[in-house]
Amino acid sequence: MVAAALYDEGYARKYRDRDEALLQVATFQEFIAWLQRACGRFTHPIDVLDLGCGTGRYFWGVTNARSLVGFDASAAMLAEARHPICADRINANVTLVQGDLATHSFPDRSFDLVYSIGVLAEHVPLDAALVARVSSWLKPDGRFAFTTVHPQSSANAATPARQPGPADGARRSRPRAAPTTDVRRNVRR
Ligand SMILES: C[S@@+](CC[C@H](N)C(=O)[O-])C[C@H]1O[C@@H](n2cnc3c(N)ncnc32)[C@H](O)[C@@H]1O
Image (cartoon, rainbow, N blue to C red; front, top):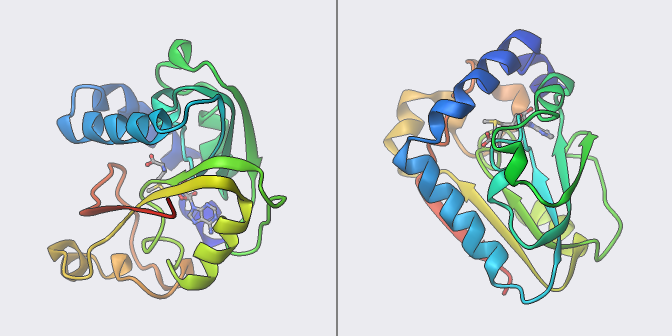
């Protein structure tokens, strides 16, 4: 997996080192609020999947959850996710799973909410096949909430690796650590 090589131990540690500072960053706070709203739509305790969880910097934004699966290709990022920021605010039972989103599968109807931040159309193509796979993991009335990159974002020109389309193999540069996504969309009501 290319992602596992990119997000190696040294890079994962640097990524994790930035997490505390993000608490003061308005954009990060907005992402947390967005996630909290997504969780708040449910009136019962939920089962949640974080696709490409990295160091688990968003885990504490998950509310009203009984279980939270953090899924990522990088063992180094998952090692950091064992001690995420604001760990004392995480109430869900967290399980970390290593795998490649391109091939990994979860049982049908496992999750109320699947979310993904900074991964789709950046590392993994966002296409109908992926949406269909994720949809099959959702319980009835489940939701898929994710960030992606606007096709006309100026970041695409500056960073060829962020072009939507090819998967990891096309990357030519280090990924950026902070969420920089332009568009947030919810699919599947
Ligand atoms: C930019 S980081 C985002 C991490 C986290 N969501 C965040 O916002 O801090 C991208 C993450 O996606 C993971 N990733 C990339 N390609 C993947 C794949 N094919 N399957 C699973 N995870 C992948 C990387 O290992 C990395 O942790």
